[in-house]
Amino acid sequence: VIGKINEEVNKLVAHAQQNDDWSFLRRHVAGEDLPGMRNRFVGAENLVKELYPSENGYVLCISHDSIIAAIMAAFGLDPEPWPFPLEGCSLVSIPFS
Image (cartoon, rainbow, N blue to C red; front, top):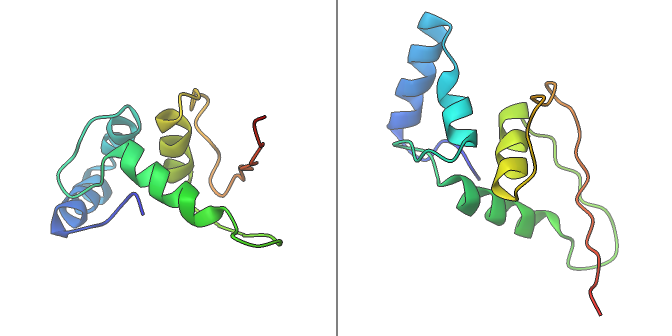
């Protein structure tokens, strides 16, 4: 939802793997628009919409730490310290009166 939408991301990942430089993920979380990656807020909003069940029950989503950090940042939460790999996060819908 937030990530790979074209070959530009594959180039970023290849560079990161070759040079052990994953700084593009932090730049994305900070709100920088990167070629090939959805805008942080748009991607986070899309994912959150998909996660809220339309009927009673649970929805389980397992994601990467970078996506959790991007969602947190998009909604004004501080992604520091960086989430551990496969760390969970809970989304709770609270009705307003």
